[in-house]
Length: 153
Image (cartoon, rainbow, N blue to C red; front, top):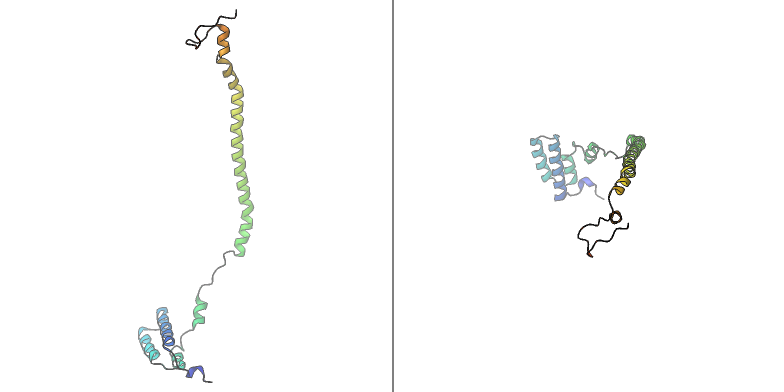
């Protein structure tokens, strides 16, 4: 079986190497003149061995993957610890706010009930009713039915 370096390279392989060279130039690993020379050698290459010689001194894909920043897990041990500490504090703060709101509401209810008890029943007795008018013989004018009733006494 033939070794990889003696196998013929395809146009897609040459394009992949050319893209790798352009990327290396963008990273600052190659100068523009070196890029032109290597691109000429890439498109003139016939085998994988020729293509490997063009990029032999450039880091491979494994190096580029190591250079990528590692993704930071969302919950680090420190953030979990902070959450455990903050959860009871936030719960107690919420409970205190609920107690304050309930106290203010109940205070207003008590004030309204006391005011009604102190002042509400007096007002009810001051207003003359129909029966008090009848007892004193002072019916309102224009009563349907015509004449005034006679006084009780």
